[in-house]
Length: 247
Image (tube, rainbow, N blue to C red):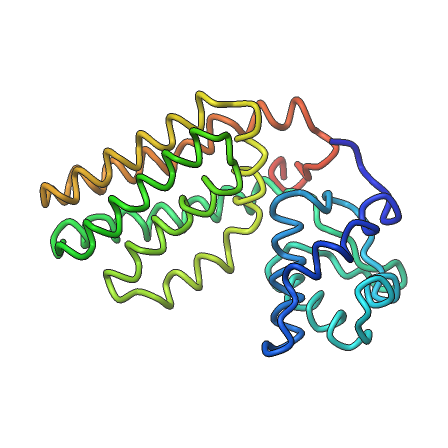
């Protein structure tokens, strides 16, 4: 993916924003979630300039909610607000990807262990349903659907363990990691199949109340990102920031 100018990416926003907009919900929260989704899926590419005025004009909003949404994205490291220069979608920073992966693995292996120790029939119904939904999404090459159910799988484990705030924290720190995950899936059916099969292994370990195997399977599942980083850097160097990783 080459670096794009804002005028090449933002014209499509107005139509897709209409699909998100709900007049009953706070504008800032909706806009933050919308722009976050566009950035995570690389619909808005790394290093693209995000003009407050341009966004507000195109989306039919005042500049205040746009500014507040961009500030929230900056807090997650997804945009860079540079004085006298403007606001830009951040490049994918490898050191932040690795840090997010470290945090996620530390927490989610423990969550998988606890889920196996406290498994209920209701949890297994939820996990089995999500496995079936992932399989259906793969069957029709629905990448967005697969990722949606992938996220729901991990969130369900957090909710079962009464760790909802932990999931919210993970969402806050793993934006850079999610962009790498999204990049790694298109045109790579084998990788998608591997991720799906790993979810099945985790599910069966939890069903068997095998806490050690559930934790180990989760660790293997989450470590998949490391096998893709170097390949992605070679194929799309323009969207990465390696300076901090090499320091």
